[in-house]
Length: 457
Image 1 (spheres, rainbow, N blue to C red):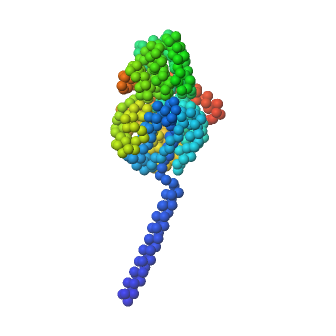
Image 2 (image 1 turned 180 degrees about the vertical axis):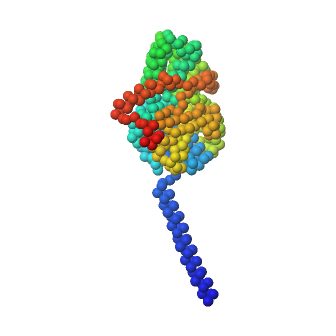
Image 3 (image 1 turned 90 degrees about the vertical axis):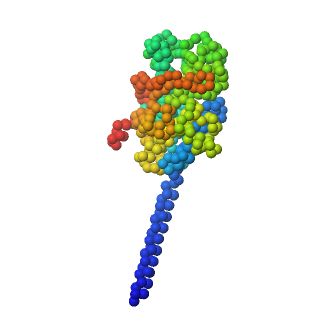
């Protein structure tokens, strides 16, 4: 009797175990199927670059810094909260039509489509602004692009983070005003703007014209045709007109050519100020010793290495996995590419706080970018000690910061030679409002209501 009872009990236990095993297997299969349906844990970052052509000397270090930071997040951190970054470069040659082709080709890649685009071209920015709004993909233009796109209610997917060309021009005017004992002392002075004849070069004109009316200085506009290797006629005008200052809004070989022409015409380099895209190593090194004293804006950062660069070298270059040469790490344009990638990564990370630690759509990442809160403590913890100022965005404010400093080339390196300046938003905000309203009217678009979105109305 006892034996029969034991056998029956054993059989029952066996059945229950089998059922439990089957249920567990079914659960595992269900989890696996759900994970497969969700797609890979990857966030796709397209990289529009120009490693060839007239602008390659400037485009290459930026692209290398951009690529290195994305690689660093994977190698050091295992991705953005476990979501690995994948990226693919697309060569634009700084040509707007090729940039648009790259955008169309890459926007649908990855499990959720492109996370965001950073075109490194104001021309491509203008050409893709409407497209990104339709496709709901953020467009980060750190230190370039449309100045009016700071207005997030008019440009919901544009993010000119860290500063615009109106900010840059305003800071330069403030600086020379300070040198002369006050902005009122600029009356009767003459400022020449030598600019790349493209949307990029034309962007600061409206702000400089506004400041010229306010302070009574004469503004001389001197466009230079792409790629900028022929500037004899431009500098002949400078010799004839004898401006007090030259603002250089160039890119690529145009910058070093301008400095060489200044030497040839006897224009003092310490009276020349380049925008932050005309104040890097490739702009001065080809000129040699004659470039000493040339000055330019720094987009918050300059050259130099800090903790984040040490990590790049440790996790990438020391293992033969760096994107470019090791000695390039920490140069001006490398740093700018690195920071630009960081801004995109932090936009995704911020969005994950709301939508979950998974691959996100462009529209979800838009929320992250307009809720950035990179205070100094957070920047320092990320390894950007002394590199940049805090950035804070909102639905209405897509710039996040409007600061700059002057740095000067001493013949071998860049040195900061001014304190921080903040662009005067009392002048710039009304200009942004007028320009953004004109854009909305032209496109027959309605302005976002950020207050309504905030309250969920």
